Image (tube, rainbow, N blue to C red; front, side, top):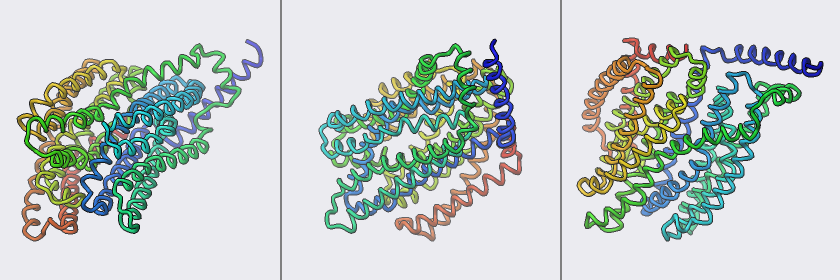
Length: 556
């Protein structure tokens, strides 16, 4: 070994010691999980809430065209969401997993090379998917010219979103989710602000009042928001760069002594990303099955007019999605924040800690989702009135979608954990089983139950996925299922108690409030949410359940 190599090795050792000290002083091992959880939750919830609240003025400004605007907007977004998932869904999670892997081995140079090459590859992939989505927009729109225009405007996001997703995944892999969260929030603020400004101008200020143009420009807001997000991520990356990478000369030594070539890095990233992409597309695939087949089946099995069927589809999918995804993101963001730690403990074979982390993740998901779902079902009537309009059918379908939300959220949590345990193939296989279940049950259930049948077929599909996935996690870790069931049972009992209290309060409120008005619906929602949250927190703290989940989680 020559003197230059010895000198570089010493620099590597000094840097790694310095990096360890820096990390321990800023984010001790005991606080990594909680900080990640808090930031990811803040980012997801804030962005989801903003993504729901804009509907109130947007829907109102559309006037008599509100249903048509929502129908057009959501159908374009469903196509866009699928392309977005194909081009990026697996990348943040795959980059996070690979980065956590290399960091656990103190191979920071490989993390840097992975980041560089991933940005190049994903930028190229973004260009390809953008061209494809733009070129074939007419076919995806099934001949609807307005929908084709919406899809074209949305396709521009694909030019920059894939590269941005790489940066988000890199920050997550380093257990630094503050930039990730801030980028999410900024993206939504800019997007929603742009949407509302252009919609207000077209529908209220100008004499044009072309709701189709308002929808098209509202979808272009996604590009404006994503660009803002990329800028803030680059800023944080430059600011924090010294904490992630070793010096250039030290990196050259690491490359020289590391047998893993750049091509292997990219290959591993792609192999990791493909399952994440498919899993990330899971919910979108279920929604697209409804989008492409629900209306056709309803035409066959009912005598409803085309206009009525389109209105039912709006009440079935686009309207509830905005609201249900808020509580899904609340439950899943906290439970999936620990993916890098799951990977790290699995690689290091810290089985006992891994078992506790899995039990805690599942428990945390139900701790949040169970009361949130029960609460949303109880306020579904005023909630639907506040965001859209008073509708018994809309209220009913929102409540059913809340139940489906638990199954969808559990799918995201469990599939992510299974992939963290290197169960990529099984996660994809179980999703395929769920999709097949959805396809096979779609027609008969819609035939007998109409729009309720579409929701039930999705519920059956996700239930199949979750049962197989949880069993596979048990096979790989032998975590204590009985302990998880006891924890979930306690959560359900407390949530039912909260639900009974809220039901009584709702009965009293309905005697004094007229929820056909949006303002009085808001008061009803506010009172019930505040009472429900206070009751649930007080009871769980009193019996020690809150401390068991959150304090234990922070000590992982």
